[in-house]
Image (cartoon, rainbow, N blue to C red; front, side, top):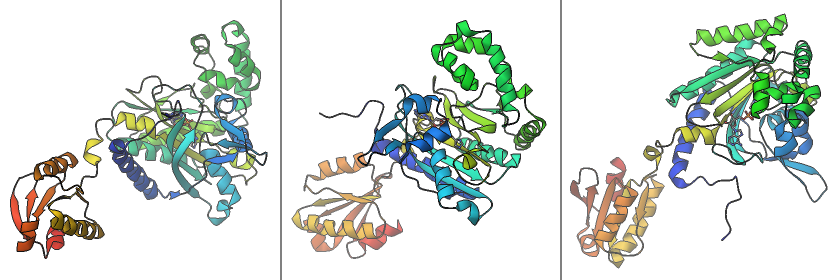
Length: 415
Ligand code: HAM
């Protein structure tokens, strides 16, 4: 038997109802905040990701599903959505249509990471991106959106971490300070970190190797190196969060796994997820639109990892399954034939209905109705049909009533 590819997974019908519910909740919230949906392809030119996420990030170095297609182009299954959203924003001139553009997208991403709990090679994200606003209130607003969503899901043990990564003016100064610090701990660093030390030392904050983590405990903080403008920006973000009673922790080591960030970065961490505890992450990326050949437009956004979010919601899937409103237990060939017509009539009225095609005993059909958790069962046999009546049984109260076959659909639709 051919099995799933390692690191990939199926989402089965018992869970999809909850997925749909959660997706509907976030869509509604995003649309209330002024976001419109953008649908982007799963495949892009490899260069798009290499240039935006950063050539020496784990994603680009080790995790992309890249292949050469028959025309010789190097293509990559998107490891994240921001780069694609920016590409579409530039390509379709969306910046010219309105000074502020808020886009969201929901779909699968692909990263060839080592599979483990909460880490898949295909996973789903909800992405929200705001273009055209320098104002720090825009950063606070996307965080507010994200935390409102977490709140509506009634999740406990949720923490928000925030940081500022500065701008092209102050970050180089911090990099120099960090490099001087790292020069003193060469022996402790892993080979990846030694390689990254000169080009992209901030990445070392993200290394999971215990010796590197320990070495970085005494590293200088970027928050002590921010220029005045970045300091003011970060201060305003924090004040806005406080105004809306959003608790947060500042975490100067929060550099994120992608290189495009400037100023604000943030992550939402959840208890109970184990090592992969980030359910959402994001930040400001003021240089990316220009860097990819677009106009000089600032941007800020986030992505929620739906698979991890669903793990936090296990046990809640039950109430969301779509059960039949009615099950028709038809006994005898005429009743079966009539019921087949009713089933279609009900469906045209948006009533969820099921029947059994196999003409089994009443007991067997009731068992099936119970299993499907139908709210009502309509029992009809050839004899009842001759009298023009059928029995409608409420499966919760067990009450039964006779209904006329003539207005069957109307009676049931009313219920
Ligand atoms: P990210 O932190 O790489 O950010 O991913 C966002 C979220 O996607 C993570 O917090 C996590 O919940 C989920 N995620 C990431 N990798 C996996 C995986 N292998 N398996 C399951 N879930 C995963 C970004 O992707 C940025 N594009 C976010 C952003 C949008 N920044 C600005 N705008």
